[in-house]
Length: 517
Image (cartoon, rainbow, N blue to C red; front, side, top):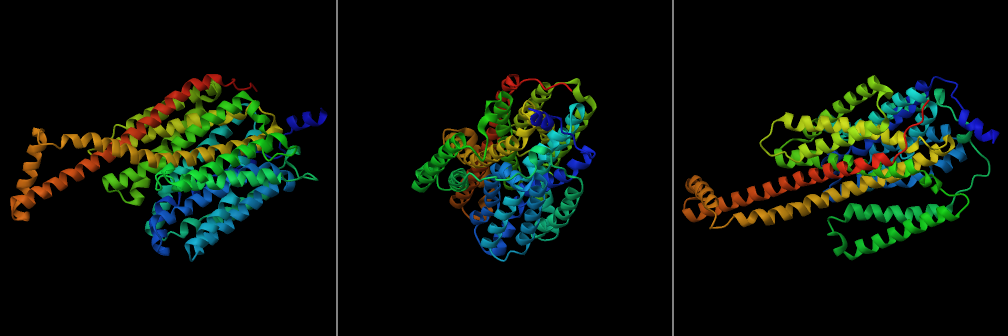
């Protein structure tokens, strides 16, 4: 009992703001690299003379490796000590970044990105645990606000930074910039980071080998399904069916062994905590909306409006400004509003921003994109920050590392699901809208006939005769139909994001209020 009390009463000997400095830098670096390579994929594919589908493995290998290492954090912290493991993770991430930059084949960069994911996957959960443990009361609110803005802003800045570097320098530099940052992070961690009693190196720590095996059997096929499912028409492809069955089996056996073994990789007892259970479910959904929207908004701007990679990334910048504004508001109001109130405001902002994006058309100015993105940014901080805090605030300090690792694993899977499903949604909704719009291209529609004759008349001199002119007019109208159906698909998808965020609001009332300092 006295040992448990000492764990709960542990306080850092250094200024907590100095302690979290290296973990915040590492978190930003890791989160930035989740999206920084997105806009560079065409350049990477061109460098190695591979297809765009093969270049996607540069992204998926990173996420896959991150997902596998996240549940192992508690084991490695006990085996090496959290401070040592944190510095090792940053070191591996930095070395892997260098290898990504000098890669001379698609196979080498995929392996290097997987190594980067292994090193970086542990950084964000440990940063969350360190931040929660190092602060109390009002200071914890401010620290979690900083953590929230780092987690949210970094993926938003990724396409901007990646696009600028790729356009002005060369794509390898999107990885080389991690090297000085990683070295500085290791130096700061060595000087300021501390290990509480429950995160220090322990003796006779054993790895749950069966748990690790089934974790790999679960996550590796699952990531392949997400990556290849849409191109293979999902379950119409036999290999997708087999991989899904293997992933489900691996998932079931993984959780079975975690529940039965004495030294589990993940301690499932944290799921008994109501705040952690419902808070994590909500974070999974919010992260899926965040990453899915980041995937399709630049795509829409490039394909539908002719933006280049840098401008499409820059168009998302107002989200970062919204995040900054939300952090300033939170810092000013502090505890005058409860976390539940912040969370409800955040989800309303996410839903409003998503709905406004769902009302876009091709006759817009930059403000029509900036305003909903700004509102979306407000919602991200106001939802992520309270949900992250409330989900862990009722846990003991010695549960934080395990719980944050488990939570970030599920959030990563949620983000992968969201990114995968959104591609299918755009494809399917486009077909649905095309089927609905094509009915208007008939000879009984006078508006269609008027437009067809107008276009044909404008093409008559170029075509040489009316037959060819009418063929060109038909082709032009059909291309407009494809464009409009694709735009409608994007609009429908953004509206679904908005509805999903609105539906999360009642779940906020299932969370217990925060502890009073």
